[in-house]
Image (tube, rainbow, N blue to C red; front, side, top):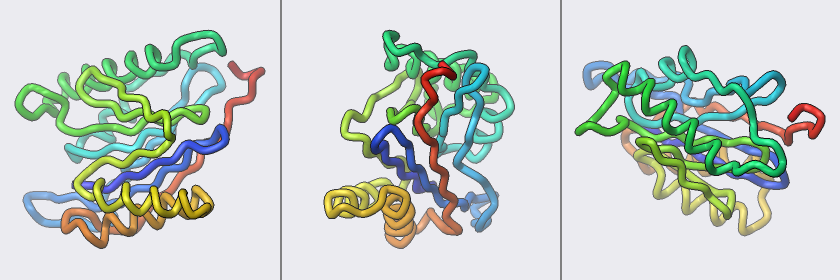
Length: 188
């Protein structure tokens, strides 16, 4: 039960997420960090926003190895798919499955690109807008309105996350936010 929101604008990725989790049906406010900044290759980084099983962010952070980022002429969607498969394998090994599939979803942001990752699946967001979790609906609506009205993307993802929290009984603050700038071409 989560609200994670992301926008990819002008080569940057902006993400925000709530930070609540449930332990035996008891909400723990501020108990988990759902945004991860991970190394990708020698000099690259990705942002991940995680919704679903409470153990998923920790398992991903401890186990996911991203050895490289795509070169300019390489297929970025195939690269994202490989990350989705790696996360699926990590979740499977940890038993974080629901009805045989990944118990959750992940937003992946890199170099102005954005995907939703599911069980061995990467869905690109060509419009650069995405939200996941139980607060996804109101958050996505708020994000669209804010960005369409010209709001700063860093502000928009935080406010959209707050809208998701307000209208979803399973999401709570505080809100965490991250920005990932464009990769330096020399770093690829």
